[in-house]
Amino acid sequence: MSTLVDGIAELVTNDATCGPGPLGVILDAALVIQDGHVAWVGRAADAPAADERTDLGGRAVIPGFVDSHAHLVFAGDRAAEFEARMSGQPYDGGGITSTVRATRAATDQELRSGLVRLVAEMRAQGTTTVEVKSGYGLTVADEERALRIAAEVTPETTYLGAHVVPIEYVGRAGEYVALVTGEMLQACAPHARWIDVFCEPASAHAFDADAARAVLEAGARAGLGLRVHANQLSLGPGVQLAVELGAASADHCTYLGDADVDALAAGSTVATLLPSIEFSTRSPYPDARRLLAAGVTVALATDCNPGSGYSSSMPFCLALAVREMGMTPAEALWAGTLGGARALRRDDVGQLRVGARADLAVLDAPSYRHLAYRPGVPLARTLEV
Ligand SMILES: [Zn+2]
Image 1 (cartoon, rainbow, N blue to C red):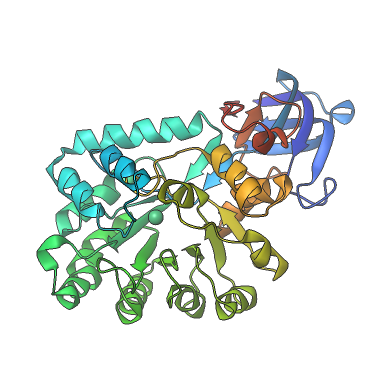
Image 2: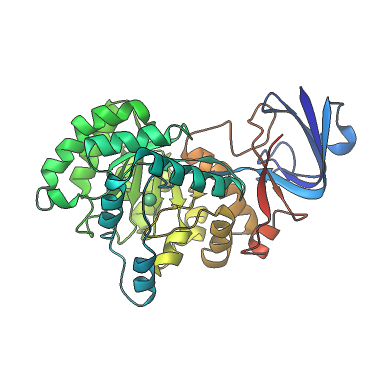
């Protein structure tokens, strides 16, 4: 069965062959959807017939957001920690321990219902692809369980046993890395597409360059793709390690030296910026303009998690990126859609060309520009065809 979607005032395809790039915008547009994929795209006046028709009444349509960085399998929340931060306490990653305690104590069903609730919250704001990390279990059984549950909602699952050194391993980080790269990896790899590590020598809770390299190389040997939490709290080795090892993405990139920017520009690693974290930790925002000027591929994602930033909203991220990080509305939208797809090495999402998945988000607005222009207004939703 085919469906014609028309009444589209402005269609963002992210296909520069369709219209002015890089967004490939078509005005007065239509799409034909067949079997969950885009079968035709162009001007409404040229649209072919289809079995059914959906008229969007002059709204804008964009590719569904690709949120390439989220932590959604956990129990409890840390609202009190947020309040303390807003009262002047700095963020150092240490609060993760309290979420680990609550997550270990939760039942499978409690973790599953929290995950499903957050994914639904994301879909209601236009997100159609989401990556989900483990990292709040930090035992073999609890990490395996987090990934098994995450795989019920997305193929983009990431093993993050190396999120922090758990409290029972304080002073024995080497032993914990051996577990993460050994028995825990064996248990988790069947449920994961990716491996990730919080490389942050400046944090007492995270991992230095040698440990991060060991984690990533072990993951690669197990057939997992690589991602890195890099340069969030200070200048450090994470970004250059990510590029050297061919990671799909270096995430955060809050503190970047010239050598980091040069490495990203020369390599194939996407720089994934997470402005909701700077917002929620009162850290300085990264300069996206500097990365774009150097030719780096930039993605935007929420990093939705109960500690450092608990927003599930990609439109909020786009608005912050435009207001605080020097991106244009078009650059921010591209980064939150096709940029996210690049960060996940996917070519079937983040764009609306013929053959791509029909993951559409519709805006209660005539143009994508309203996403950043009207921050905090619930304009975006996914469209089920
Ligand atoms: Zn994260």
